Length: 281
Length: 278
Image (tube, rainbow over the protein chains, first blue to last red):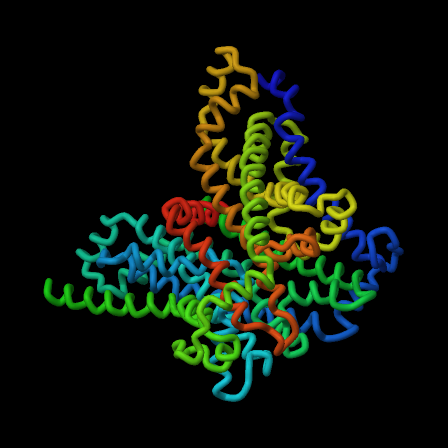
């Protein structure tokens, strides 16, 4: 069987592999190369060594600012979203009426695109701030908390669904046994529910982590970095470096490589953690 | 004890109802403002339309004209539908092949696909859009090739995870009955993959439909999808037509809600499966 299969290699893999080369692999390798060059289009690159990487951190503070902004945003979003989603999941697994309707409603914002979400919240946040005579572009902290609220609205329902699945997987016998042993609701939560949904907690933590860290559309629509570039996150800062100023393409590409390395590091930690959990189970 | 539980459940029900209404508020506020005159929105978004501020459907007419929404809807639909078809078809073939045929090359291929999942778009956005431009993929048909290449990682990953769980006997029986690999795949394997295909289709559809940066860089100057059309309305500060913006937001949300309510079961299942695997 293996031998006849080998003849069909092109039929089964060629379309995907060709598209993969064009859309991903070649651009990725070119991207790494270009980060060490000065260029305006891909044909006029000349080698400058590590200069772009140095300039990414030294010409101005935007990249470092964006990094700090992104890390703060990610930490706060991950904690808030997961705590709230978990509480909602607990409330929605008690078999009260209307549970399905509630789940449907809470999950819905997740399906709306980032650009649309950004403008919805721009309207609402500006509508509140107008009473104080300012708008969201007044200070980076308005943009920051605006993004936190937006992200919560978008992801709470999604994470809630994963937690609900996790909670429903806990065997009722276990709950029963805990209750017979005299455990109160807090003890059941602490010693049964939370340890049993640990895999869901890992999944949700990393989903919110990577989603928050790589956020772009919402950031672009809500504040576009205003005031100045103070509310730009990493992805938006890279975009602005590429397309917002002439002669900075190389620096933009170098920033993109740094961004990629951070994201890859997070992914590696995640794979490590989920693997070790699987062994335990 | 029972009465106490009932009371608690009722309180919980009220609490969740209030929360649900709060959750829907942002969308309802946008909907309400889409019927107000453009100068009555930014400063008083929480006020109901009055006889003075009510503007009928003029925001919709205005917005559709300004953004070319009808074409944008068409492009979004076309690109999403055909990207989903291309990705489900080609990546399931690839995933099956590289899972079943063990060779060094296939293993490398598999890990390259996995690797592509962790690379953020910003890393390749410049080179990829230049590449698309150079080989004339900068049109609504060409961008499907880009989506196939970029979506391959996740799709191959999900498909090959499922292929591994299909017992080999079925395929061997088909081979003995005289099926060649193409027949085996389309008659036997592809139908078995159906639930996974639905998961992949939903994840890809949501991604492509909502995607902004990739289409704006590849085809944005000539063809606007819905997110591009909405972003296009932004304009400079102050000059933004708030009325048209509200109307476009509503029009952008409606297809998503229709899609959600009509295949809710699959969407929630698919998204959870995709999350657990991805």
